[in-house]
Image (cartoon, rainbow, N blue to C red; front, side, top):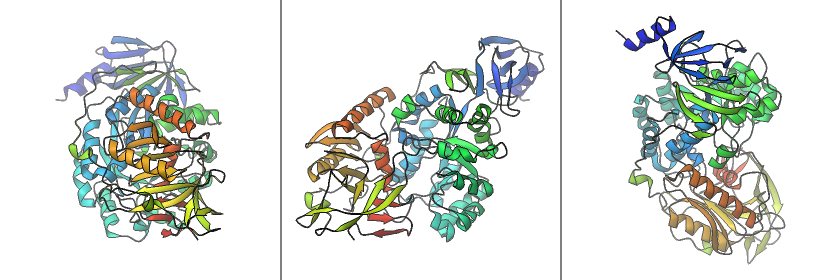
Length: 576
């Protein structure tokens, strides 16, 4: 006999006191869109009743609103640059109790070992971390990553309890042309009854039909309400993303109606640690939506029930009998001011602080700690040959977007080589293959950063995570690259051949074992250093730079193999 079920039913029938009863709260009923003023009875971490109950322990909500725990429908934990256990301590304070994580970033560097590390690190944490397996490693054949993952490489991971499906399928040409490796991955997911996430940047019309017909049911790459409407029309879920580089929530809100909101949910995708701490996670998506006209209850439904339904999580996303007691106490409904957070009935966070302890120390495999393999790079290796008065294909960034513009402009040259121009805001950019010492260096020109001196560099460069660097001069550019090699990966700002700020990321060049508070302080120092080299924009330069190497996002990107035109899926010359 199931003793736990017996206890739960006895407490639900009021034949015994419940473990915990929460009184004097205003419950957000995500099914009816109502606010209920009733008790919540909890037994063994599960809600067993809504109404009037007695409990062994009474929690007085003192008139606070109570929401189901927030669910992040798509996130790359690596983008916060801390381990899952440190990430957990940050996001739970913002009411996030479940995340759908895609370890795509570390998989591109460290392959299966990287995925296993993330899965293992996520176990036994209060935050419920579920995984979607990386579908495209490498993302495309137009770059070099640190690993190649076949369907066979992924199969064993489906046996893990916290793996739900196949993550964002970003290699659309492989789907469209039914290439064998992609077909095997899709077929495995279908046969095992797993979910499949999408990544349909710029895909429309018949191409979108092919995507949906493949069983891909979500997309987080919509940047206009028109794109979102197309996906909803084809039965897909639309994920409204608000990350650090890609901020699309406000642009997508016009698509939401009372009739279609059930197919909409919130994600962060890629969000830096400092933004998570200062701004928030899914709580920020909710408040931003309410601020811009979405009905508050609808916004909370999108953050809870809709996400749970999208991923088939029958015990998540609602406050009702049979659901996990993942609860968020709110001081204010519209501003989403989180007061307390409970997971399975246990208090995890209070007034902005994680109160759960202890957190385990991560064991880092040695293979994840030695991932920078490059040859010595000199001035001659980073020259872009250029005649006088030549025109160049230039990447122009769009602040707070990961899409770019392809512009053609006249550039300066000296001794037959391109010269960066501060007045024209034309800076040199390099992507250096760092996994296998191939010597590949892709060179390009970028504008929009506004630096007046120095250089920045990082080993966070989606999705292959080669070294990426942008500079106003070659000396600082080379210095930044050398520093990254010496510290085993990370982020660095250089001025006048001196390091003025850095953040080592020793785990696959993407994450650190350092406590999140320490990492946040380092990020603040990096932000100060950016001002020293002339940055004055309202976007995150490091995160924006990291997406300039992603050749599945329009219009123009740079890989270790050269300048890449996404529209035609081919490399092009920098100088025309």
